[in-house]
Length: 414
Ligand code: AMP
Ligand code: MG
Figure 1 (spheres, protein in one colour):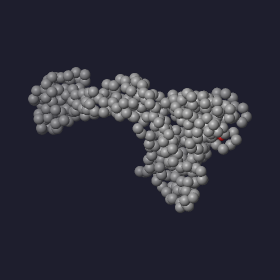
Figure 2 (tube, helix red, strand yellow; figure 1 turned 90 degrees about the horizontal axis):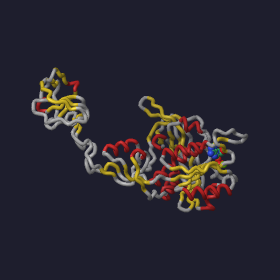
Figure 3 (cartoon, helix red, strand yellow; figure 1 turned 180 degrees about the vertical axis):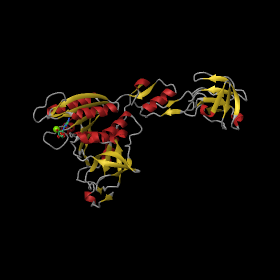
Figure 4 (cartoon, helix red, strand yellow; figure 1 turned 120 degrees about the vertical axis):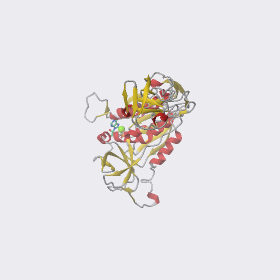
């Protein structure tokens, strides 16, 4: 990627616009984690954020156990291949055997406790049992195929820290130490509304000049996937009166209000004006594309984020700004944006607003390539559906085919 030299006066694109990084910093500086907590049953804990450190009251595994179906032995009895040992007991998972005497073997199955006296398990593929005797056709080292007590989690250790967002693998981990309920932060209440005289709910016929309210479904999906409680105040006409009324109601009921449309410079854009009248506007225009206007501020204690109206702008600005804001308000300790380096399979000119290009990932030889959706318009929602993620085209840099670029995968952001 080649950086273009520019004068310092021109360095942040159009005057009055702040950079994406400055916007993120400003937004995060205002975000306060929810203070209230509640007990949750592990069955309903997906996506919740832990409000306490969780320790284990047991070892996992709780006892030395077999990693294979095979024979438990004393390794001292298997120093050479071909030894024959009498099989003196059978230990399926869920049962406990008796002490293994020297010169004997125990038939054992995956997960069953290794009997006292045994120090290794031989996989059954290396053994041959005839009647009550087994031939061990290998040299066996001490500890082979034994999963030791506490090797995953030691009794008394911290399993997960306060601030951890619970993904499926964390739920499994908590279940493995026997925890059935624990303290989490309460859910974030996010109020939404959608401005525009032209927008209509899907399922209804369109009159001339109307479009469907796609933003509602994108935004609701994003909020649901982040585990927020949604207060959906619907479509709001383009008048100052209606916007003031809905913003006041939204702010009264929620921790955060997120809207679409009405934040630009047109005469029909009332959201920013309503925010200034009822509360304060802290940030507005960002040097990025799609999504230059993102109004951020507050009404009383409730934070406010007004996303642009264009459907791709809603999606991208949510992933860049609203996601981090929500994660911090939910009390998570990690709100970084996942980023990986890939190779551009396209050319892109130097830009004065940082661009977030919709790309698909392909693999060629040993390289991970980003392919560009041909139409990058902020209204072209097909680009977001087609893509796997976003390539960040930084300010004032030309991207040439073969250059390394930063890629933000959707699966890390959703
Ligand atoms: P605005 O920011 O209100 O000027 O809207 C910018 C563009 O986004 C316009 O073309 C709007 O028609 C479109 N738009 C606004 N709201 C929605 C919505 N809820 N769903 C789909 N498109 C919208
Ligand atoms: Mg509008």
